[in-house]
Length: 440
Image (cartoon, rainbow, N blue to C red):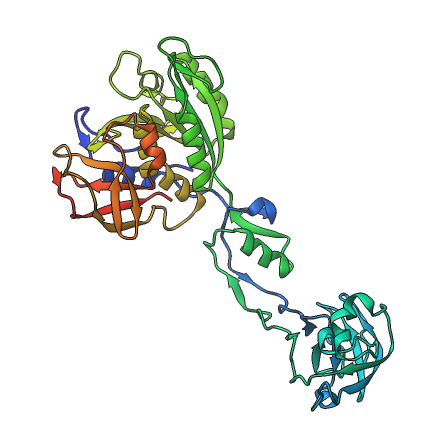
């Protein structure tokens, strides 16, 4: 899961965003592959190429309800001079011993049924009298009026070339073809394909289990009454949802009070179901920064190589960050700041790539594009900090949403992108081309 603890530096060292992310990605390792049933493998990443043992379709079959016939027998057929054929029986989907169609004969065939030997094409039931002998309009009623298993005569009013309305064997894929490559994320279409070629299980890297908890004695759960000085816990909900959106199986733990021992006990209890731990709050320099107090010395003689380091990053929002590993399995832990916007931006920059790395994906980053900044006034950014501003992106243009405050949750809810202002830029004029991280 993870290797050695991250590198360290002097307490006042200001880490760059890239340095911090590089440390995380150098430490987090993809989860070991397992064999899963198809539906359990949804959202997982393949670790093997898939070749098909059988062709799709496995046999020539009809794409219509109609009649399987020989081409020569209906050549020149018209409403004035229909071709009259002997109906020798029915061919249903799943038929193991289909009829043989000889000269002057037809077999009534259902959608998906195998094309019987001797037949070369299928004429839709609408092109016939449905075996009712009532002229061309009968075909429109043939589905409901023609008795199943009917034999006798059928009139065909149009010719059809060979292979018409027939799904040819191997027209989708042929036996031996490689249809999925290692590294593919399995969604509904891929699972459908695996089932269609007879695969009931598949070897994948499992979806990471991410445990999310927030800290703060002031936090109250939604639907509970607020007392003076209290706020609702939104971070744990946002981060759990974001982890699921990234592909993880995420577990939300209720807010933990500002008590180091309680926090340590909670984390230890949760390690059994965690491939990654994520906390929010308590990582700054305040008197009640419980995460730092609880985890700064998490590594000891009993857990060599473990430990969490707390850093200051040259970014806004999200300057205080923590990263390391805890527990006997060196489970990675990312400690994020407590302000809602800081927490979410930090998730997008650091936690989401870690989750994608655990999944075994090669590209772990959100897509980035260049866009024209559309704003009423120039954006300002602190010198030496990489700033991430919320924005709305569409058609090559990005518009800032809300201000730079790290508490503006409503503005975050309207954003679908982050505007990136580099460390060496302090002013960005409207109309400037900027880098944009696409969130949706």
